[in-house]
Structures are given as C-alpha cells and as structure tokens.
Amino acid sequence: MRSQRVLVLDDESSLRTALFRVLDRKGLNVITANKIEEAKLLCQGEVPIDLAIVDMNLPDGDGIEFMTYLKSLNPAAEIIILTGHGTIESAIRATQKGAFHFVTKPFSLDELMSLIEKALTHKKLQQENKQLRSELNKKYKFDQIIGTSDQIQSVLRLIERVADSDSTVMVTGESGTGKELIARAIHYNSPRVNGPFIPINCGAIPSELLESELFGHMKGSFTGAIATRVGRFEMADGGTIFLDEIGDLEPALQVKLLRALQERSFEPVGSVKTVNVNVRVIAATNLNLEEAVENGQFREDLYYRLNVIPLVVPALRERKTDIPLLLNHFIDVFNKTKGRGLTGVSSDALECLVNYAWPGNIRELENLVERMTILKGHGAIEMIDLPTKYKSGKMAITDVNSLEIPDNGMDFNTAVDNFENTLILKALEKTGWNRNQAAALLRLNRTTLVEKIKKKGLTQPGEAVPG
Image (tube, rainbow, N blue to C red; front, side, top):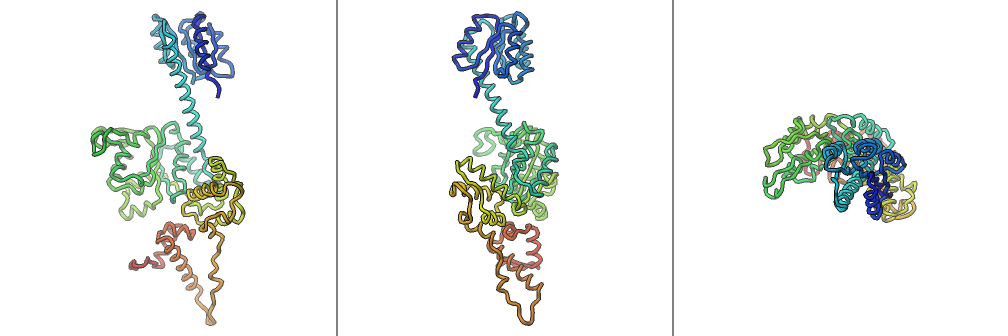
C-alpha cells in the first residue's frame, strides 16, 4: 500500500522545512511549494494528493483559490488551512466549502500534527468505506446469483425491472433458496445503494421482543429496557429493510407493521413521539400467505400491502441445470477459504447430485460442498465420498420389474392410481407428513401434492377422513 501523500503550500521557508522533516519521519510522501502555480504543477502527477496544508495568504493568490482547484482534481483530498488572525472569517468560509479544518498562526507543531493525523485517519476511513461499498456492490451484482436456467434468468430480469423503483417486494420460496441474496441484489442495484440494508428475521425473535426490535424502545418502557434503543426501521432510514419470515409475525404486530407501512411512521415502545422514516420494504416468506389469509392467520390488508411486486424464487430441484454451476462455484469459494484443492465432481457423483431432490435447496448444497472440501481436501468428489442419502439420486424405481399381470388382466388406471398412492404415502411417512419435504422428495410442486392428497382422500394415521 502506498504512503499517503501530503502537500505543504506556504511561502515561509522555515515552516515548509520543519513540516517536511516531521512528516517525512512519519513515513509520509511529502512535497512542498511556495506558490499556487508551483503547487498546481505538483498536483498533476499520477499520485493523488491525500492531504494539503495550505496557507491562506500566498504571493500569487489565496488558499481558497487553490483549494477549489485541488478539489476539482481530487474531491476526496483533505485540506487544512493555515491562517492569521485577520483572515479567520475566510478560513471559516473555506471549511464551509470543504476544508477539513483551519489553524491560526502562530501555532504549536504538536497542535498541527494532531490535526494532520486526524485528517489522514479520516481520509483513510473514507477510502476503506469506499472500497467496502465497492466490494458489497460487486458481491451483490446480478452475476453473483449463479445460474443460466430459464427459471433463475426470469428472476434476474424481474430484479432488474423492480430495483429502480421504491415499491414493496414480496420474495417467496422454500427455505434455502437464497431469498436474502435476492433482497440484497435488489437493494445494491437500486438508487438506495448508499443507504443501509437492514435485515431482520421475524421468526427468530420472540414475539414479546420483536416490536422493540422493529420499532425501538425508550429507557424504562419495560423490564430490562435499561437504555433507549433504536429499532430496525429507524436504522434503515434512507435504505432498505428486509423482513424475513414475515409469515411468522404475530397478529398484534401485523397491525402495527401495517400502520408503519401505510404512514411510514411509528412510535417506539414507551414513547408518544412519532418517528418518520423513508425506507423501502422487502419481505420474504417460505409460507403460502394466501392460504394463511384464508385461514385467518395473516391479515389480508397487510398481505396486499406487502405483495405489491411478488417475486418467486425457484426451488433447486426446479433448476437442475444450474446444479453443476453452483457446485463449481462453491468448490472455488471453499478451496480459497479453506486452503484446499478440490478439482470438481466425477460424472457418476454429479448424476446423483443433479437427481437428488435438495429439500434444503442451495443452502444444503453449499453445506455439502463445504463438508466435502474439508473431508476430501483434494482431487475430485467421487461417489464413495457422498453421504448415503445423496446417492439415492442414481437409483431408479425397480418394483415394477417384479410386477405380475394376472391371466384375467388388470385395470391399468387403478394400478397406476394405487402405485401413485403408495409413492405419496411413503414420501409423507418418510418426512413425518411434512408436505413441503414430501413434495421435494417426489419433485412435485407443493400445491400439486396437496391437491393429490385431497383428491385421493389420503390421511395421516389417526386423522379423520374429510367429509
């Protein structure tokens, strides 16, 4: 990393020399000039000026003139103005125009050095923040959402269309499909990119604490409120708030959230003062909120307030062509972070992984690759390396090979229907009658499976048959 570059512009030779010596000993790259014309030439080099120490009164002009010139070349440059008592008003005007600070003559060298260190620290923090924001923007650009399948490309096209707006987005999809990554991509490609992205998992926080997390609280408003706390909505002011697992919100909080969305204002717990915020809301859930509305578990008005732009993230089993790309992506990631040397996946192991149902979606695939990276370490992932459950993707249904057709024949539709019943019941039993996981095992949409269960009248042991 290069040394920070400091320009000393003053017509007093003794001051220039003293500052050069002390700054040079600090390891800084110091250049000096006694006139504005000379300083302008020095500023035109390839290495930018990080800090300029500029006298207000110079033989060929004033310090504000030079400051304006330097800022036009390098807006991030910090400037300290040196001024006499008679020009303090001008120095104050310079700080209003962007100077870091001013020092009146005569001054102690220690005083000036303290100010120089603060200015350079401020400059360094600005650079680090700029770099961090650049990395965040790169991380959440569209090319970080891996996949070429029609399903995921359709999602990317929708993100591009909605990112520029301020409309509320509802991201739906199974657990592990990358809903937060989608939300971050919307934020970091929107006009709010320079504002905060504040996520909160509504299902992970106890209901009695969630209101405080969302809207903040005042000191003493409840037991344990030992200090005033800012809520997530206020933290997200000027940016985006991501409400994950919104379907788990308790009815009482649904009312308060609806008001906050409608009026863009709220009262912290224990306060009568209204806080106004400018936030974009992105919500996400793995539940069917339409069913929750029908069942009275989720407010209809809140659902329509959130579901302005619906965005459905496909399950991994619905985008199988992306699995090889995702495998290679995660292998590269974990090779770097874990210091390993995996070279890929063998063809038969890949066949298993492509045909596996992935009930945990991309999160499950990522966890598997991380485990394989640590345990395998080097070379290609082979069939023998895979946990048993992932090998089932290569196995075909073979029970039909032993099926005997009676001499008097059989009813084809009945036989197929019975076989379908058996498959559905086995999947339900294997998953403890979890319809989401059973649908994943059978590679069906959840709604398709639920319709089949209702149509066939299939029930869990001990459950009454619907009339």
